[in-house]
Image (cartoon, rainbow, N blue to C red):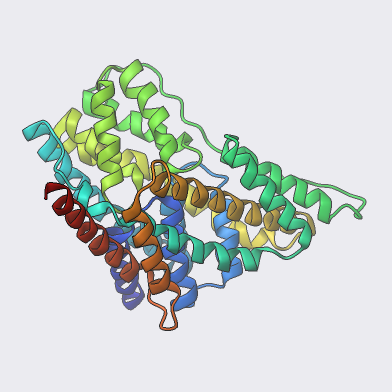
Length: 381
């Protein structure tokens, strides 16, 4: 067990420092590390976890990290994996928060990140191919995946789209059966009442509530934070919130470490720690409750069909994210640097001597920054 925990801690610390690009990219990197390389679980089980995780509150990719730790080394593994993935991003975000509060602006790190998103697109496309190939158990599922992708691109909430895909798939595959006995999952939702409490305690409770009801990807966090901290409590201005979100985008790891930045703005070091604990604590609880249920879903033909349809729906969501990220990072507006990095990292990642996601991201950073310097020199001259 001790050796496994050290291995888990080392892997997810490394991912915590290098996993740029948001939830879809994190899941792609995770699949490469724990399924393709280390064989810690089958691709089918990874798909089942991914599909089910999309239906519970919290940051999907961080919860997948926790699932991996729990699967490989029990509850201690879940704790080590989750903390190892969260703490690097939280530490880097806290550093940005310190500079922001001390100097009134964020450090200029954007030039170093020019090549990150094109490299991440390549990594996500690789994961979609592998996971989609495994999830596509029936031609009927291809229609479901494409429909969920289209719904997501059309602005439909991703959780609703995945649920709809799951039920349509279940009914279609199991249409010949003469019984239907669905089980219903109830998710806990915390409701905060007005309490006379210290500001730090109120801060912790605010982020605990957000962590318990945050469905979908980490990017949905913006709406929750705006409603809770800007409109309701008046602790932040719109500009301060936007700066906090930007800090969360700059750093690798989970986007929800935006909470660390905001916590420091409001309550210093203690505020940063309590906000981070509050927003991630529900995810540890949800993962511990959900993980043992996944294998049981495979025992019933109905729930297995539902899970298969949810899995292909989740792949459809990843494909929609890939298309949106590709358009925004390269074509809106057109960025020749991003296109060059995309072509170079594609050749690097899918070449004969296939390199991993970490090396691909590092290559993207180096190429992107080099092209940025080249562009600056050209315009200056």
